Every structure is written in structure tokens, then in C-alpha cells.
Image (cartoon, rainbow, N blue to C red):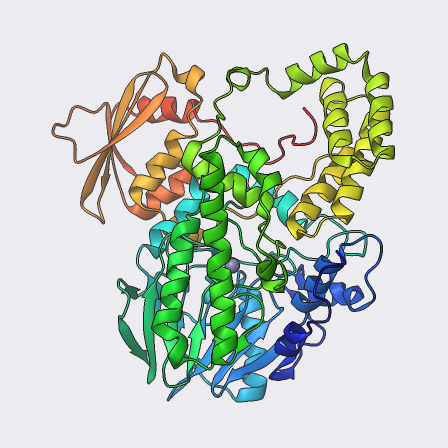
Length: 599
Ligand SMILES: [Zn+2]
């Protein structure tokens, strides 16, 4: 920690550069009065770093908690600190182009109001979504009702919903640990998530794009504003793009280069990202744009000014992802496993000395394991790990071997005294999984998690540890994420809708059920058949015959309504109507409150 470059204050200068005004108070409410954003609750971060936080993360919290309207370049503005992400505004001939309208419509509307107070009542003449994550499109109905050009990278709509469809409920539950919305905001509690402070909790919307960017070099003009695009699929998101405003000499880096090491695998769970492609696209961005930009900004954190600074920033970010990728593969080809590589791999000194490569959101430790997972998967080749008992069954046996729950707690205390909190957590986790009623073990594990959280440079690790401690003491905090946004449901493809249905079939309950339903989508003119057999719901587009047990004629909206539990009113049915009831009868529900730190 003594090696950290605290003398380097450039980030503070850049984070404050161009400041125009704050939102005061920085509290945003939904129509029903519910507070969905409160940046003032982080004011305590402007004090000295306490013993309950890692100084490097505290510093990052100070930077991320800054809030307000900023001028980035002539005619280019950002509203920062009114959600997890930034909203960027570029002034055109008639109005203003909005890039990435935050997560919630309420936050986006507040950001636009703040901008207009200082720059005049300009109409929104276009929108750009930099990529397919909800913190970059969810607030769109807060800035426009549509009817303007909306640009997005190729594949945007599919990925905007698909990442949250199949494993959505589990991700939402784990996101409670990742972002820590249930934690108190205090020097002992949640101090941000590295990428920003936290996620807002208002209304999520989505208006489909009108223009897809399909190739690097593509140029588009909206409201007189020229843009030159670089497609970067498979980086931080499956559909993402960087772009230059040549007339403003301003470069938008989406979320491909931000002031932290990003996630190769986000801890709430997701598909593993491609660090190799990520590094290549950053290198391409330098080649394409470095000579044509005086400022580079992203949809999180603060901009970087000046050609030399931009190139250094992009090249270091590039080297970071390339190094993580290549060195993990070098070491796995020598036989090291993920956890071993995570201990062995250290970042180069130049990168360690640059604040923006630090793991406030991603980390070397979990990103290395992600690269291993991408290439080799969960199995490390050791047969002892091929058929282990599951966690609770293992825990019962470990505790038995160690002489019972009290003995395990005593052993754990020894490791705590030696400051080996990692092993103390492993031991106590066994004690709790073997016997949830072991209060001594629970309390001590909560203490250990709290200490691990307070020592973490990574904000997300801190939140996971502190949430673990909270749930051990107070019980489970269910996920509250609204996954029923009508805009998002309407954006599902028919194939995704039937996929969603298929993963809700309770297999064993459906073992002996056999049925087929044809769904004729009257507005699309398409027919789909779903067949249930052996507990698997199979979909087929345009079946050759008409032999299904039941045929339903309905619109896609009605299909979405059925999925949302609105019933079959108004749907034309022909054949065995009992088939639909039998299908509904075998559908299961996800659990928004499954146990994580207990068995
Ligand atoms: Zn984002």
C-alpha cells in the first residue's frame, strides 16, 4: 500500500475540470415519492480515509462521488454522479444528442433538466446507446418519447435483453451482493462499486434503435453532428462501439476504457468476456483516433485530455487486458490452475503505478480465473475435484473430522490471530454450512467477512463480504430488481420467449407429460411449435404439419402478456385447450431469495 502513487493527483484535476453546476440536493424520486438516487448520502467520503476502508478504494469513492454537469469540450457535456453511469450531451444544429441515458427514466430526466438549466431548453434530436447494458439505455424514456434517430451497435437489441433473460433471477440475487444496495452508506458500509456509486432503482425503459452501426469506419450525421464509429463486439459487452466526433475532436470510449480494471467476468455472474479481443480493439482505437482527438471520455468516470494522455491511457488499458489474457494462458499451459495463477500473477510495475488499472471493479484475482474458465472451464484436471461432495455435505464431514463445531471455531480463532483471515473464513464457512444454528461460528464468520471487506481495494469484493456479514446477522435480503419492465419484455424475440418458458419447466414434474402447442403469431405471420417431452420444451419455427394438440392464434404482445401471467383472454384457441393448462401446471418459479452464505 505504501507503493500506491498518492502523489499523483491528475485524476482529481480531470474529475473537476469543466465543472459547471451540481444538482442540489442530489436526491431523485420516483413518481410515488420513493427515493431512487441519493448521491448526497456519500458526502462522508470527502473526509479522511478511516481504518474501515482501503485507502485506494476510498480515493476512488471520492472521485466517483463527484456529481454535476461538466463541459468536456466545446459543445460536449457530461452529467456525472446521477446514476451508476454518465450521460453525455453533444450540441447539434437544432438541439442536443444524448449518449447513454442512464439506468432510470427519473435520473435521465433529472440529468437533462440540469443540462438545460445551464445550456438552454434544447430539444433532444437523437440518442446513441454505446452498448447493450441497461445502465446505458434504461432511462431513455426520460429524455425522449422516440421519433428521433437512435443509434446502437449491431446486435444491440438481442443482447440488451438476452444477458438478463436466461440466468436473470440468479444474477439479480447476486447483484444484491455485488452493488450492496442493502448496506448502510457509511465509512463501515457501502462506499461505491468502483465503477460509480451504485445503481439507481427507478423505471427502466427501452426504445429500439433506428440505425444500427454495422462496421468500423461507418459515418453517421445526426442534427449536423458527425460521428465516425469503431465496432468493438465481444469486449465489455457483446454489442459495443467507440466513436469519434471529428468536428469536436472528442472520442467516446463507451465502457471499453474506464478508470479501473474492468471485469472479464462480473461477480454477479455472466458469460466470460474476451480479454484478447478487448486489447485488440483498444489498440485499434489508438490507430484510428489518437491523432484526431483532444479529449477521450467514457460512460463511467472522468475524461482524459491531450493526445499524450489519451494514448498512454489507452495503451496501458490495452496492455492490462492483453497481459491478463496471455500470462494466464502461459501459466495454465505450465499446469497452474486458476487459484494458483491468481496468486502467482502480478501486474507490471508501470501498470501498478497507474491508478486506472487498479481493480476497483474487476480484479487480477477473479479476472485470471475468468480467463482460465473461458479456455478450460470449471474442472482443473485433478480427479479429486471431479466428484466432490457438494458444499453442505463436505462441511458436515470436515467439521466431524475436526472434532465438531466448537473445535472448528477454536481453530478459526487461531488463524484470525495469525491474520490469515482467508483460511479462517474457509473454516468458519464449513462450520456454518454444517450447522446453521452454530451462532458462535456465524458471528465470528460475520466478523471475518467484515474485516476482509474493510481491507479490500476492490469495491465489489467489499460489498460481497459486507453483504455476507449482513445476511449472517440479519437474514436474507431478497432481490428487488424489476425484471418485468414492459419495454424489456416487448424487446424479447419470440425465440427468447419460448427459451424463457423452457427454462421454467420443472423437469421431474414434466417427465411423463407429452404435448404440443402451435403458436400462430398473427402480427408477425409466423408459426412456432413447442413440444414437451421428457421434461424438455423444444421449439420449432414453421413446423411442416398441423398435428399439434392445440393451436393458439395471438399477437406477440399477447404472448408477452401470457408470459407475464396475464392469462389467455382474447387468444383464439383451436384443439385441446387442456394442453395449455398442463404446460402451465409444470412451470416452476425462480427463487429471488436463495441462500448464499448459509446452506
Ligand atoms: Zn456501464
